[in-house]
Amino acid sequence: MAPHARVILSSYEQVPQLRLVLRGYLRQTTSDFSLVVADDGSGPEQRDFLKEMAPRFEARGVAFEHVWQEDRGWRKNRIMNEAVRRAGDESLLVFSDADCIPPAHFVERHLAVHEPWSFHVGGAMRLTKEVTEALDEAAVESGEFESLGTAKDRRRMREKARKSRWGTRLRRRHRPKVLGLNMGVDRELFAAVNGFDERFEAPFLGEDTDLRDRLMRLRPRPRVKVLYTRNDVFHLWHPVAPRSRGRNRAYYDDDRPVRCMEGLVREAS
Image (cartoon, rainbow, N blue to C red; front, side, top):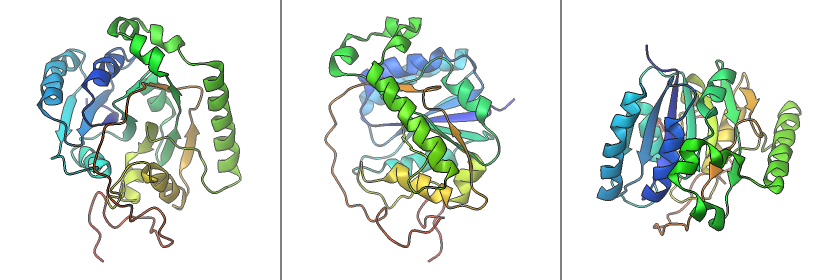
């Protein structure tokens, strides 16, 4: 039977992080998902590593894919859309990053709240450089890492949960709070807005909040599922890899359509 969830991890030259993150997905409490590494142009070391890991997922009954594109600068949105285009019958899309270790129940809890036209938002415990460097594969495989995260982290997740619940109920702008490294979208809902806007050509300029904004402008509005504090991933510290920084031509446009013009499909102008 086809899996119900498709987990898509954005990645670029992250073998050290993937050694930990993929072990997190090997210990999931469900195998009702496929796992895709959406690779924005990594070199042969990452491709070879992913080939080595694939049989371990197959042995667990989890389909594993590596979707790659040539490195021509930051084109994350394009490779994420391509990972969706290649999907089978999965009804739920779960988006995360290749530097985020999931707790054992991560996929199961996304599946548990999923329903047609739903949009899931979750958080991340941001690990320090020192904690990250001390973390090894054994700590992931045993689940020891799930006790990491500070009291400040937990307060931050509770605040994001509160703002997301109340802000969504009151139909406030910029709500729910969204992190691209932990969100789920019903597949038909994602298609309704034409996926990620591929006009984004640089990181940290609103590509994830753009998706949130367009989803929340749909009618009927999505059914928002707030998973902060209940299903947070663990974000590994790492230096930011140098990439060519393009221009942002999308997020601050006043006339952004709900369906982006350059997404899963190219809209006729």
